[in-house]
Image (cartoon, rainbow, N blue to C red; front, side, top):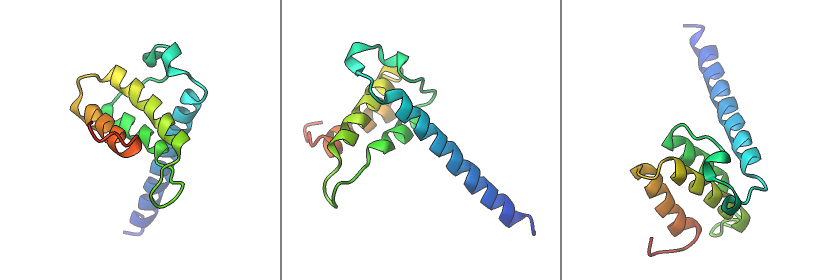
Length: 110
């Protein structure tokens, strides 16, 4: 019973480090890339549709209580384009894209 708490804390720490490492790799891969000039699949390799959603979270940077940072929203758009190239028929990624258009870009017709 004494080893449960340290094991739990170790699991939390390793989970945080994995997520932090993933976000660093995604940010490094997409920084300065013009998506229109390269094939999307050459930018970053996503292995699962859920990874696209986790990566898009870097676009949730708030300027104020009601306003997202415009550059972060555009950065998230790059990630979604690559995700759609990998998983064009996946309903999860398509819903993520629609949510991005509505919440991030303000396009209600999505």
